[in-house]
Image (cartoon, rainbow, N blue to C red):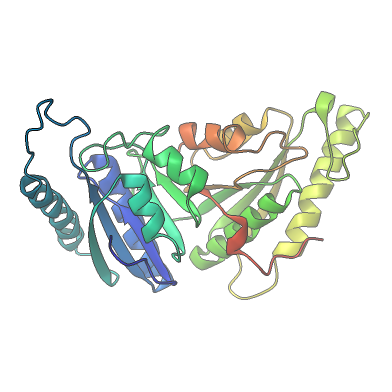
Length: 302
């Protein structure tokens, strides 16, 4: 297997599908904006079913096709004519999730398409993309095939007072500042099942619950924004009484990036992979980032 990515690099998986082409374009643009290198990874494996009588399958054609897929992906960036980051290619004989996890061990980001084909067999949300979101060692970006390269002007992040949502907020603030983008910070509450970070159930009317929701978000924002330069173009606090996944997906309509933590608690009930985060990965109308706690050691909670 190829060497791992070095810190200060972005890893992207490609398989020749339209979705992976979009992922590659997104990753290249982000690498240029960050001033870091880009590792382009293609994985191939022998067919799962071998000949029943012990027949031999020559791996050479599969490896050649994998190399051709990787070459086509890199050439597609050259044809765009826009600035390119430093590129490093990796052709790996391995199942796609294992190849990507290994490559991303010390990376800043892992970027995948929402679905695909070819070397990443079954690159669907619920398959390779879902495995990456659930278990990758770094933040993961899932790029839908509908994504258009219009820049990053508005970012949406979901928060609930949990440690992972602080991570998501800090990541989103830094990204919004990098792109001079507006940041919408969303907390979704349920009046009938409102649980705040203290663990106490809130037996309040809807107005009181909304005030508590806004106070939670404003407190989190105060602890995350204003620490450096540059800054986001603007920050908006949003409290929504709809379900958390619905609130985030609706707010992200027309946005350029949606950011969620890998799991959560509190007002955004069930912000867990397999719950709200997973629903957002499946249905987000824009690229979505699932952050990891270990990638923001300097976070401070207010």
